[in-house]
Image 1: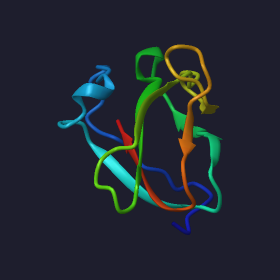
Image 2: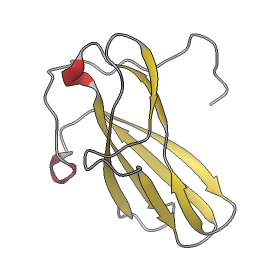
Image 3: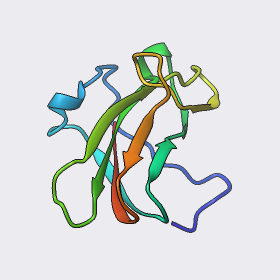
Length: 112
């Protein structure tokens, strides 16, 4: 993406509602193309700013670039309110991890 410093995405409107992974069709999203050099299990980290404790979660999806179907969809939570913070946990308390079956291009979708 080539950004750094003070650049960020701001998802609006923030309604303090959490969409479960099964109900993401109406949620704003951004997509990134990522190259994974080898099959493995990867932990996903997100750096974000939560306005309050109700705004500390988002959903992530990873799909193979040529499959057209989400390979894995998971939630991520744990951003501390009112500060820039890193998070890597799902709402179940486990690490937010995806398993990549083969090397290649993948699309990472981040839903608000």
